[in-house]
Image (cartoon, rainbow, N blue to C red):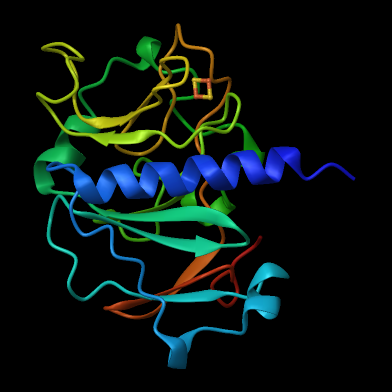
Length: 200
Ligand code: FES
């Protein structure tokens, strides 16, 4: 089995995380690896759920945790972010209604691709060739006056909105992936597990 792909995406993730810490725009990229609430490395590699404390996440901020060797982002969207999702013309998005079922669980097949509209929980990997896109707010990244904020993949220029929906005319074929997750409380999310009673 080749591990090259795994190592490459892992390296890209680490590079992206490092540059995010150094960048001014992407704040709170702290990885809350609190030993007491994390499963062992072995269990985690096997896919154990990861509990995330989102209590300190401010509107507009993003944090990153690792689940199954992948970066998972939690983004706290602002009311403007949510309003802007509705302003993007449907013909500019490849899968505006999240019809590709592999890209999200049924409980996130909605306008905001989320359980709680305020929080986007998403695997931070581009659906083209696996780079980690950059959280790019309105006015950042030279993406033009029409840019409503979202995620820009520096590898080949794919663009995703603030719900991870892919724009048309870019190489990424599908929306970014929403992982299974559920809320344990208002401030705690468990990534890797569906909510009770939800159809996975
Ligand atoms: S890997 Fe993201 S655009 Fe190619």
